[in-house]
Amino acid sequence: MELKTETKSDPKENKNPKGQISLEAKIIRIVDGDTAELLYGELPIMLRLQHIDAPEKRGSQPFGNNAKTILSDLCFGQEVTILTEGDFDMGGRMIGEIINEDGLNVNKEMVRLGYAWHFKKYSSDMNYDKLEKEARRERRGLWQEPNPVAPWDFR
Image (tube, rainbow, N blue to C red; front, top):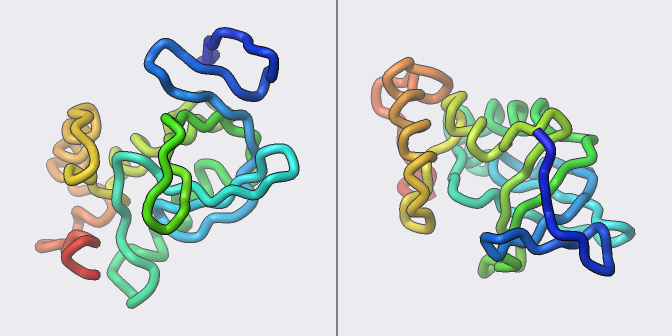
């Protein structure tokens, strides 16, 4: 999958028709199942994955370590594309989606594999809802548990 953007003066930063900014960066650290650190040129940036909430690593929530491992397998060390509207959360993390070297939307894949919830409080993208329902039905990842606790309830 090739990302098509309109070229501006800086080829690493382009606006697509949705108003999103497309950044090329390298994933240098996986913090947990929904947070990664990227290197944009020489600038390190913390990224909060948009539309999803993964089990907490802190406090030992079931599947928290698994979610971190899956996110790492999907993108760690890769040159990726970050799609963002330029928003930051209260913790100062940029909010966006990761498209890995294979053209895969990592945020959606985390939900599809059953290692993250669709974070409906901050996302109305029904594609994520559909992926979560599929993961639940197929009992993937954390949906193997009879009553998994959402991270926002675990915190």
